[in-house]
Length: 87
Image 1 (cartoon, helix red, strand yellow):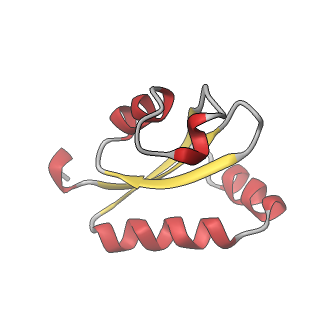
Image 2: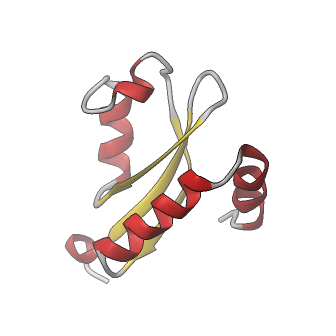
């Protein structure tokens, strides 16, 4: 899959231990933007953040569906999901 065709669902762990799930086409760039305080109010006061999980999808729709499903999970199920899907 060419880099421009890649769509990612990613999870950050914030300084306060909380998780942030998002969508991007470039995980490294997006992590840098979060740490610079760009385009995300949630992580702005929770820096530094670190990518702890990412999944690649063929379409934006698939990636954003994965993001939405993750965000609906309670914390314990998010922890289980991340443990089960370690890279």
